[in-house]
Image 1: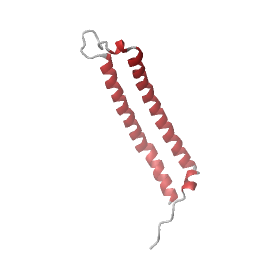
Image 2 (image 1 turned 30 degrees about the vertical axis):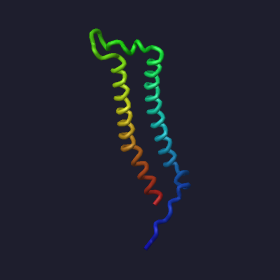
Image 3 (image 1 turned 135 degrees about the vertical axis):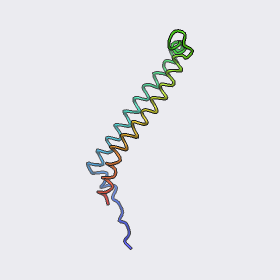
Length: 105
């Protein structure tokens, strides 16, 4: 039987396709992480420096406070950013990985 030949990962790492894949994945991850961190830390700083603002009702007579609405919005944003990553990775990054994998065999 033929043994599978070893894959030269060093050679793959030097290819333009791999560099482009790595750059796109890193840019996407960093962008989404910065968005989430900015929103989260804005909320935390608001808790620390203006907690009374979070206790206000979302409109006059409302039972739900701005803080609760902000918390739900942050969780929704986290879910949305996860969906963005999954969809982008499935449509753009996975085909690039498959292309690199085929070229390496």
